[in-house]
Image 1 (cartoon, one colour):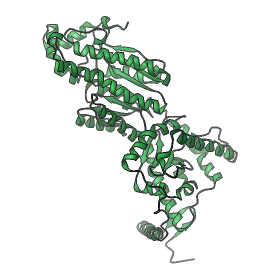
Image 2 (cartoon, rainbow, N blue to C red):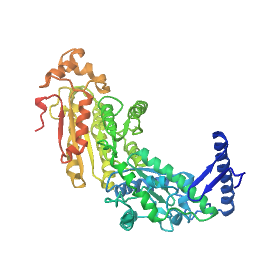
Image 3 (tube, rainbow, N blue to C red):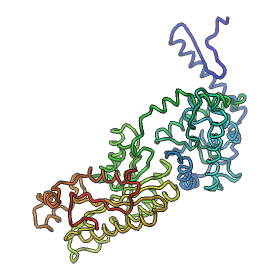
Image 4 (spheres, rainbow, N blue to C red):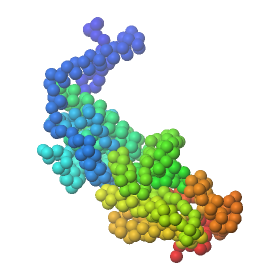
Length: 512
């Protein structure tokens, strides 16, 4: 009846505009939304509903400490049914929302739209903190809150399943996808980092709606029963059943050292292509940054990340572990591969070269393993470590004393780690390759001196290595990568303390 009407707002549904043509209709949508934005901005200024935080955000340093302490705990608690990747949203908007007194009840009203609910679940977990702030939370206290959330979802499922036809037989994962922590921010979960980031982005829209609605009235969402119908809609459940199986290492977070070239590069490519989130570290940061970009472009996903790590420096190793936790929430495996080689008979070996070999090829593996095992124990999800050692551990070569002794120390360290950590379901295994020449920075530097040890020309060295193994075959980085993938996979779930040779069959180097 209103001839001047340009549009209509349908309560709990949305905005419809019209006009004589598409351009006019679209411009009126922009006009109406802009009017609403101006109205809401004035309402927020008048009411100041969200601008008076009850909690104060932690300082940058204290927040980092909190996240490093609690993210692995959260990942374990919410990933009991299936592992997850975590994302932390510390934006001003997120902190404004979680720090306000109203967040405790407004956030529990339900999602802004059914589409949001399918990504974020019906409700987030709002973590009620002690009055003094989140730093007073205990790990057990936070886990208890997460379990209470899961138990409430089970009750929600039991209360409402009879109202949906056909009645859903299987409860969806009951653990939260969105966790609101005053003073810290919003932590979201996903099957990969991209999914966790999308959940975070969607919940930012929900926070906007909740804050603005609360400034002009009372924020409302769907009643529980209707929300359940959307949550367990048979068509959505059917679509989930059609999803292809996840890749072998999906939901896993790993670290490969010495990843710039050769064996490390091939391992990183193999694991990322199989779904893992892989952190690539090396002293040559530009090379691992380029490799990460190359891998991500090829797999069409962001699952490879570059780190500059000096494995001989405890501080550098610790900072790299912290970066991994803050980026993805935890860690599942380590491939300790970084290594160097020096050729000289013992009586001509300089102490500085001996010390350097021990620092990289033995101490470096110790520093890496120590930090990673600490995280794995705190996370309580098990894990796997694979050390790249050498054929020289079992069959040392002339003029290779510094390398062989350090690699033997690395192997013994791996055995001790396997003994100490089996009860934590942390597996530790070793790969012994021989003479991997392809794309090898290590061999580029020592070919002339190694050839001299055998009394042959440098051009004949690679052929010499091929003909000394039983299969008369070259060993490539990809061969080592496949062995590492096996030792990290469920196929070897009962294997720890093992030495796996990748040498074409050097009989002197048979494990015994």
